[in-house]
Image (cartoon, rainbow, N blue to C red; front, side, top):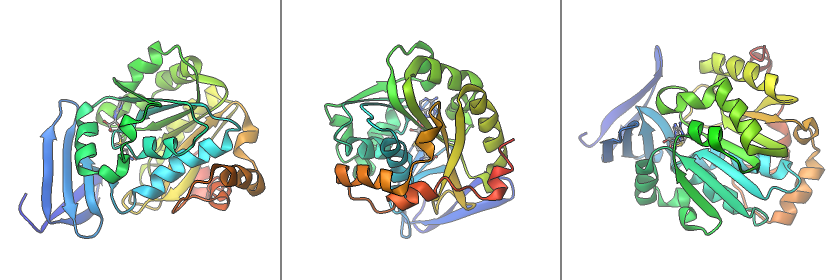
Length: 285
Ligand code: SAM
């Protein structure tokens, strides 16, 4: 790829986002997916898997903070966390900031993503993969949950979209194994669930599957500039519905106790993120 090329992401039929690219830093077919890492003047470094933007240096903090701090501050005392996907290390980095978390297992299908992100996105993982609390497993998340016998208080599925290797992480079987084999009593599951303005059927499919399994299944939102189309949704599921409707004061007390500095997340944003616009609520059918 020559300097100052325009790269377009065409995840959606008839709609694209484009980046000026100054340099392609890395490209490989890993056997699981096509991995590209490019330098852009506007968003910093950008990673694409199968041509779809996965993360950028400039806006990753929004997604990683909301994917981690909402469930970890909603849970009264999270000690064990399971991460599925998340090969860039941003989720693991944010989970490790919670000093009360004693153990994290991360199940990532593609070692190349971890290796390349350690090299080209050092600020995403910041050494997280070497933390003694982190146990990195290279496997398909589907197989891991099918054979899992450990229990986790919070499960975070930071997968690619339901195309390619990520597709299996959106199936009813996966959600059932994840809940029955891996989630502790009173635990919380969250998962990357796409941009409903562009991928509305992902909300409907996920809601139908999770609401059959959990007493409380819903979503929460945040705007991630490079996940184009407005709000990005994260799926939420727990058998303890009270965990999704805590007050700002309850959350604030835990945030104050944890002493974690953030750039997007705060207790008010935490509570507000569960207020869904009607166009998203109508997809939950
Ligand atoms: N934040 C991004 C997003 O919202 O699209 C996702 C980032 S992360 C790079 C996605 C990760 O999911 C990748 O590292 C990919 O290798 C991993 N992945 C995809 N399918 C998987 C599977 N079946 N099991 C485990 N990891 C998987």
